[in-house]
Structure formats: C-alpha cells, structure tokens
Image (cartoon, rainbow, N blue to C red):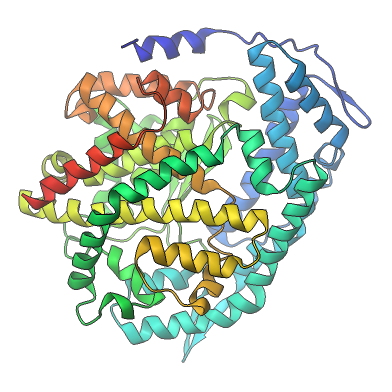
Length: 532
C-alpha cells in the first residue's frame, strides 16, 4: 500500500499554483482569488462568533450589523456566474477546485442572505422561549435534555406535551418558510431544488450513495431488531415496542450505573491522557478553548466553533457525569484537533471542503468509548462492564446509522417538494427504526429533523472512520492510540485541512469507495465481544 503519510506531507509542502492575478468579474468590482479568500474569511469569522455567543451565552443574534457591510458581495450573482464559468473552463485542477469551492461558498451565502431574517428569528426564539410546567420554568433548549435525564415517564410526557404548542406555533412555521424559500432560491440559481443544488456543488451522486446506504440498512436489519428488543426490555421493562412514545425513545440510549467511573472531574484529564498517548499535549494548544460551564442560556448540544483556522477553535458543552458526556467531548475534540493542526494556508482548502472529513476524525475519537481495550486499560472498567458498555453503545451506533440513512432519504423528499413530507418522515422513521410514530409525532419533529443534508456528511464519516481505524490498527497496532507514530500520521492528515474529500481519504487508505463490508465487520466484532 502506498505510504499515506508521505503522500500528504508532500502535498502540504506544495505552494499554491493559483495565479493571484486571475480576475473574476463581479457586479461592481473585479476580484482575485486572494481577495476572495480574505473577504470570506473575515465575514465567516464574524458569523461564527455571532452564533457562538448565541450558543454559549444566549446573546441575541443580529447579523445585520455585519451582513450589511458585506452585502455587496453576498448578493453578487454576477460574481457567482463568473466563478461557475471559471470552474467549467479551467484546466488547472487546483484553480478549478478553488472556483468550485468559492462558488459553493458564495451560493450558500446568497441563499443564507435571503433567509437570514428567518434564521435570526429562529435562533433568537430558541434561545428565549421558555416552557412552563406547574411552577417550574424550563428553557426551551433544555427540554430535550430534561426528557432524556428523567426516569419519570409522566414527567417526560408532560414535558413533551408542554413543548408542543410552542413548536407548532412558533418554530415549525419558520422552519417551513425556510425550506420553501430555500427551494425557490435554488431555482433562481438554475437548479431544480435544494437536492439538485447540493449534488452539483458537492459532486456526489445521491442515487448511488442511497444504494450503498440501503444495502447497509438491509445488512443490519436482523441485528438491529434483536438489539432493540433487548434494549427495550432492559430500559422500558413495562412497555412493549408498539406502545413506546417519542418521550420514551431517549431512554434507550441512557447508559446508567457507571457514573463513578465517568465523573465530571475525570473527563478532561481522561481526554488529555488520550491525546498524550498520541503525542499531543492539550495544555500547550492555546488555540483550543474548551467551555463546559453550565448556564441555562447555553445550547444543550455539544459543538465546535471554528472561528479562525488554526488559531481560534472553541469547544462548547454542558458536562455531567456519564459516558455520554465523555463521548461528546471526544467527538468535539476530533473536530478541534483537525482544525487546530491545519497547516493548509488557503482559506478554501482549510474550511470550504467536505464536512464528512472532519466528522470522520470526530467519530474516530468518539468511538474510543466503544473500544474494549480502551475501556478496560485506559478508563479502568472491568471486562464484564466493558461488554455491557460496548453492547449498549453498539445499539446507539446502529440506531444512529439507521436514523441518518432514514433522514437522508427523507431530506431528499422534503427538498424536492414531496406532497406529504409529514407522512414520508413518519413512514421512513417507523419502518427503519422499528418504533411506532403517529402522524402527530411526525408533525412535531419532521421540520426540526431536517439538517439540509448534513446527514450525508455523517454517513460518509461513519464509513470513513471505520476504514481509518482499520488502517491505524494494521499499521500502528491494536493500541494505536498509545503510539506517537499514529499521532504523527493523524497530524499529517489534519495538516491538510479540508483539501481532500472524504472519498479521497478512503481512496488513499486503499478502498475503492464507501464500502459496506468494513462497517459490517466492525459491527460484528463489537457485537461478538459483547456477547462472549
């Protein structure tokens, strides 16, 4: 096999072959590629900071103050056409790729600029809405976490019912408008709909990708049904599958009984020790800021904000004791290490690439919590306990895979304008996840589930992370995470930023495409360990 490490080091040493004097015609200005890099980097830094402050502190979003400043370029369809023409005509592969990435960026910004009033209102609503239950006031953003953490089924039901009016009255109408306006804007740009737009600017054939993911669904049907029935019996003992409600589903993913091993106090030290095994000292990485403070205004979902690559990377979360919070930190640290170690200087090649690539590194880290040796040797759990943890995490892994395959197919219908998206969502989720879902349930969640095909990035990443893990084990040993050579290899990958797509990564690992067989083997290995 070709040495992947040498390949990537060589490419990072190459200087850009793109001519900075190449002129691109805009409505009122001409631009060089270098000028576009500077403009978009500065603009996106301000956007990222604004949404970070909303997520971290609940600050009201007002993008007008800087979008007006950049309006001259964010609405420039003449420049957009120039970029597309350049992409179609250019023979130099580096310049051609730059044209495509800036076309993707500018077209996304044109769409966003036309939707920003709705999006700002949505984010501000989510940060400010409150749910009232008896004498208790709960932040809208925290309801999902409250449902997840509660053992009281009546309380979970009351929370679910309490959030319904606000969702249907305020959130869903905004989300519906955003989807409709997005489709309209894509047509103005020359595409049939958002599905057609996404495939063209990301160079991915959805029909072919859907065929691969459907095969994965088929291959995991029997095992998933077995593990679902087992998990329902363990977690929801008095319920049969056909009586499970939406407010019960999250209970299937809670892993109880191990908090003394996965404490809040040990979380960061565990992460630091893991990174040290790879030769990475988190204490010395001043470009990574970790904020795990617990305030009501903060979003419940762990996230990484890429303010500026590689100098300003911020990780947000709300930690508590338990494996889930450890997994969230490991996931976000995969993103953070990717961007914090990037050495690719060109903006479009360190941030405007394939999102599945960074998700691959995030899953690689997150799934250390499903590695038997890591659990027993690094966390200190017993072998018997490791089997329980792996089995429960494997159920979550299977569920997530099947959920995102379902979401991908649902999003295709939603963005193509299917007549009844509520029913499509209900049917796909019920069929593939084997849990009952009424139309009323689907109506509550069908719009908030939409991630505008981020589902594709997750699915790509699950395939790629399995292949990358196998490569690391084959070349650096079963305990690759204790091998500094493996760390050097990963840092060489991260150094290239988003220059390469997820598919290009797996090609360099020796695979022809996104293949089902490695994923099935990985699932079977974890299952066999848990069943011994």
